[in-house]
Amino acid sequence: MHTNKMTSRRLQIGVVGFSRPHFDHDAAAALLADALDRVLARRGVAPTDADLVSGLTDAGVPRLAYQRAVALGMRTVGLSARAALRARSGRWPVDEVVLVGARFGDESAAFVARLDELIRIGGGPQSRREVELFRAELTRRGLDPDAHLIEHEVAWHEPGPAARRRR
Image 1 (cartoon, rainbow, N blue to C red):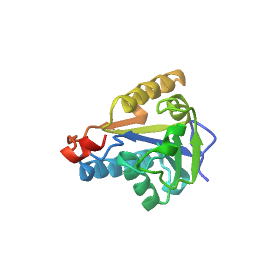
Image 2: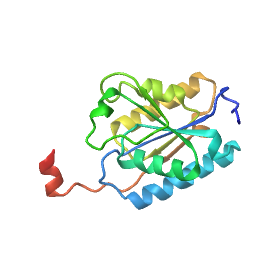
Image 3: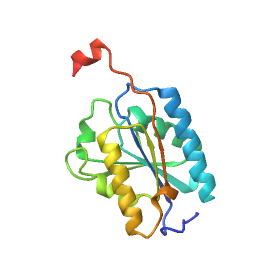
């Protein structure tokens, strides 16, 4: 097994982004695939020697990330708060579940502390907070955060009337 230079464990690649379904899925999937390929190539790591870490839920960017990870043969990790256990979207059947805290956001510090690399595809306030926490964590480690972070924006679509009524 490959061990990376930052830690003595498998390469940990985090993915954050929209968890709701109202965004350009095709663009997000293409950007995510490219970002994962770039990270693995830059680090010289085979997909089977890396873990993809996301928010456990079976929706939005986390779902796209887990789908891509499975296609590549990566190990999948769901790191979230216990609130994910009650999410309407359900949970992705990850290889490892890590639950921290009760509410979404309680897990953010543990999430970024685990990561070597981070990919953000769109996302709202929590995704952006986690990027800032990741930057601070890498700075604390004496590393350049920009060398370990890929961020992309994607088009967001307002939900239709039926979706708004369900909220």
